[in-house]
Length: 86
Image (cartoon, rainbow, N blue to C red; front, side):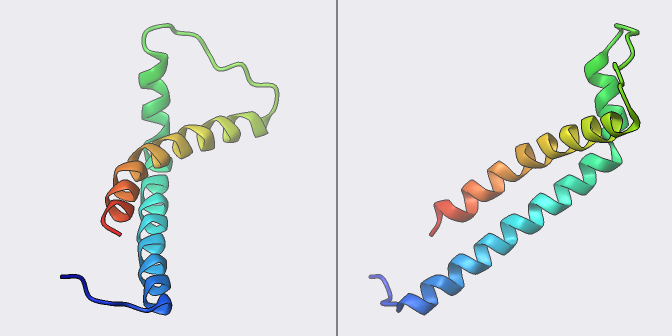
């Protein structure tokens, strides 16, 4: 038997789950930023090619893109777990 809750309680629960998901994203982004050089070298493999860089901003852009992809990939299971139980 489910407990009856009002609209405000639903919003509070949603807020809690969004905060947990956002914190997970920030944590995974931090992990991605720490290990971005290793991740980049892993993807480059044994090609011995260098990244085509047109300016200093491009290196930062590529590193943040890699870190963001890692963060999204790590956050998806947590977000689906959070919103699957709503």
